[in-house]
Image (cartoon, rainbow, N blue to C red; front, side, top):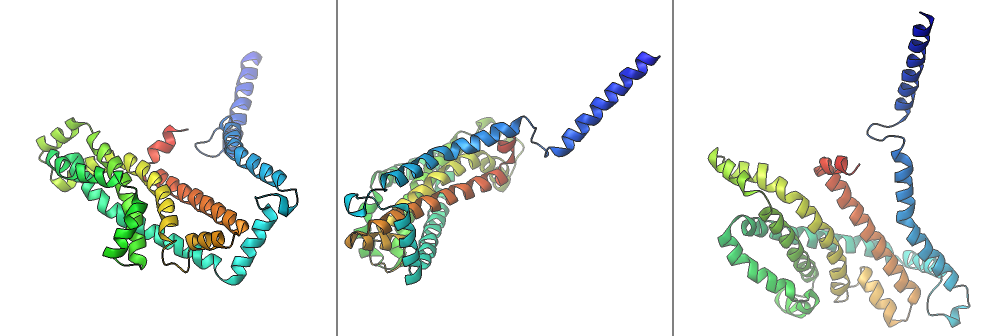
Length: 287
């Protein structure tokens, strides 16, 4: 009798300890996963930290003996541009141009990709011209765009949209073509209308490919921005970079490169948040 009561007490203590431990751990994250995620987070930034330390060590010599500006000089350049009133308006204008070009390119690429992915006739009509457009380096189109559209903001947005269009088109087209055709046949058997087929089959099936294309498209948007902001611009990161090159201001050049990298990382993080919100099952599968 005493032995059974001792066993019951021990089991109760163990269950209460497990309950207390579970109360401290967030939902969906076990205690054994926390060190792994912490190690992954540290490892993700370790190479960047090593690069920054190398940059600091490489710029310890006098300024006239090295081609690379020191971190202190780059921070001073940031302060000078901010005091001039050029830095933050340029960052805002560059962001606006990237967002406008990305939205326009995506709005044009999505219908074309859905038609080409879901229809053989659409594929035959649309696919070849798009591939020819993708084969042309989009900076080479800037002289034609200046003649056709003009030298104002429309040319810059159009150039970014051209760079975005091909990447979104190819990824969404392949995502639609990868959908199991038996799902389409089942929808036809149940006589579903086209809107239901689009919302319930095509859109969820192509969404992962669309997010992949969006990641690449954002990178290309920032690359295209450098090209278009060197043409008739008085504000923008590309304008600052071009002006710094003319006056051999390497501190401002490095600052622009760092800002491009930071904005690119922020864009990637934003797409990751949207992807986790739109496809929560992927986040659960990755745990």
